[in-house]
Length: 198
Image 1 (cartoon, rainbow, N blue to C red):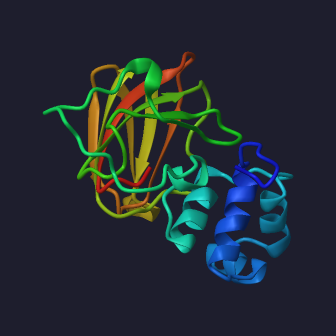
Image 2 (cartoon, helix red, strand yellow):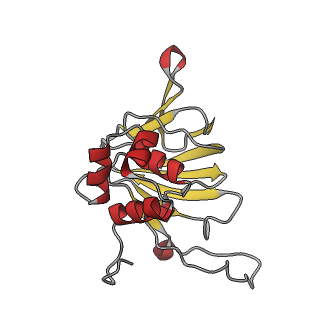
């Protein structure tokens, strides 16, 4: 929450985290490879970062993407009294990326597990952007609906894959990758990522 009691915006949370770490605008901007003025606009909610830029900001601040969208619950994980935890469809934690409308819904109860599973909805023509994503771990995606174009690697070694319903793809997350919905309807993908990086 902001000081006025309203839900904190993305820009407010980035600025709050940067100040808590005693980083200047220039230090964070330089580490993320963006201009100081662009970072200032992001923090004032006057500009929206791409998915790749948002990942870089989170990496430099050593937080998860979810930390920039969801207020921390505080305290320790509650003691689990059952053998399994159910995540109801209408109670998933969700993150909608600025500009793209891509919606990630967490299928696992929280981020304190060995694996993260997400229900991802990508509108037609939208994707992770031209800048590839790189993070620790491994990931696998299963297309439930639509047509997805995935690029893995860079330069002459780059691979392009087109996936449709029922197709799955696996890769090490340390290899640059990006994806886009090339169909005419929302694409739905279920992903598994380890370790969690939501």
